[in-house]
Image 1 (cartoon, rainbow, N blue to C red):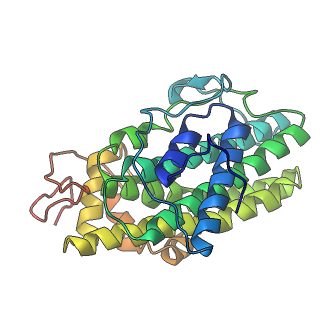
Image 2 (tube, rainbow, N blue to C red):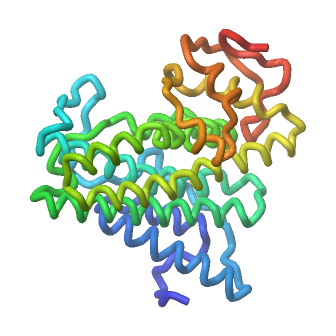
Image 3 (cartoon, one colour):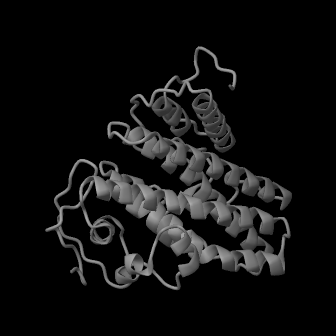
Length: 301
């Protein structure tokens, strides 16, 4: 088992908060990977760590750079230029760093909800992989003569966490099943862009990310369906209601239907969410399960 000290967090929730409150990007990822290794080592040894309870911050600690800008203020860069390719790699790295925090926030923020051990296994594994992804991209930026933080980044990445801070089912619906699923749609084109224009090292990094993101979407779908089963709720209707309530905007095709299906997202989950979105109140359980009579937005059944 990895070495620990008196200052090492002794519960899973405390380990998650330790990462969330670490500002330096490389250190954040190092801690995420170390805590994941410790969690899984304890599980294999038959001495699992307690989940515990720890209060996550409203917003995770971040390095001083990159400068965070509103979406409308983000500079436009042509992907066919060297500067544009550096900008694209940093944008993806920024997404991966936010994903580390999102996956650990779901552990700490919802630790009061009883869940099987596999739930915590999945999100610790996802956080570990997202940290690996960030390191791959940060290394690549340095090979390209840049570094993470050299360019401004999108300030809205944490909005989904804020929107779903008290709602586990909404968090699962919006983060892995909408936002990460979008990554499955757009990553193949990015891989082809870098295959044609370079740098060549970007291709295996993006292929690794693409393959492992399917699993992260699948974790979201699996635990969303689990909670629907717990409350005898219709998964499709509940998903539509929660996304219409908490996701600001419509889903945009084209969709990678093959990889979405592999992750447990059939077309009738996301195609009805293409187009205008309306928002009305919905009654929920403590896990965020929308009660059957709540119907939200156009096209509700």
